[in-house]
Image (cartoon, rainbow, N blue to C red; front, side, top):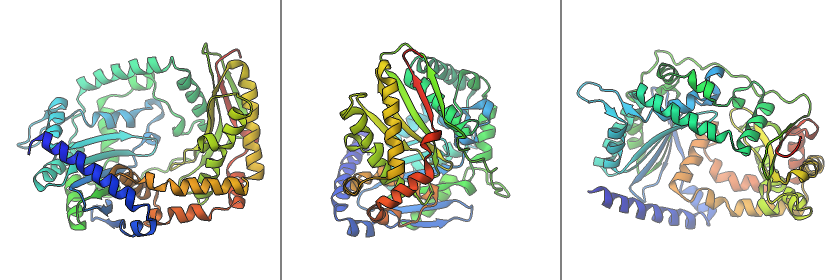
Length: 454
């Protein structure tokens, strides 16, 4: 089968799956019963989460490790990110298998009509495989992915090139007001916590390929893997596939727990930064540490934030800041929960001469919402929107895999997707008010205003 034919099949299958999933999830209860998540732990310690989807011959896999930016040594901020990126830049030789440089590796994936990539966020380093499940193709794709996982080359010359490219990108980013405001906000909210560390030219200069190999070798092991699969494979096939995927990684004799990292410290007092910058719009960010992803207030905070600033044109912040006072074109709020308390953030852009008024109104809206909670009308509208839009959260293989991996990573119940709409539907106004009062202290938030005259 030539690559063109395979791409056509894959495209058609994706369309079929997307439509089938979308239609099926309008009948929520029946659809949920058709998507059970199977979970087991292999002898290596790897945890596996599988959703069998036999309708189309395709498989998506995500492998997560506790190797995100929170594990970066402070002087080498960015180590996790560049290590993940460099893991795709070539393979070492092993036995009869020759070394592959980045071009040969890229061509090998293209020949299979499959893809394999890596990236790192704050908490985890993730590897993603997508392949058709025709036996001849899937077996070769899994073996190539196993080789890439187990024997990345981390070539020195490529790293020097990539570091120069990243330095150029950082210099360009440092001219953008949004980047500078976000950096100041993160440092003020997180203090010395790893969530607040930023990759810089100096931190990149301290990273070498030996550091990448040490970081990778210390954290990427089968016993620490959480593997999520969605596609046309049985449990037996998935179990064998995961064993092959992880087979070329070194297995520690004893999989000792990784060091426990400190929690994000709450803010002791309000803090305001005014940063002059020649721009037509002032960047405003207001917030504080929020909550961890496994917090029992998650659903109350999700529904509440939709009402406060997550619901776009129907949110309170938009109504008060944009519609009533024309202080900004857009204004939003969100939580970013992770393994630690990710930030609660209110963000907007405004004319520099309107920044003080916009900050005052945004603060008042947040404080009033924390003190009083939502109205029943706001609550009903938010629930209707969130529940009605749930199908769009899982209307593709990729989105479903994201959800399964999220369940695996955060230790959520296996029936999380089955009960999501029910949990949203049960949230009350009193629960939202109590949850926001527990999590937010409007009198102790960080405010960053970048742009205009200080």
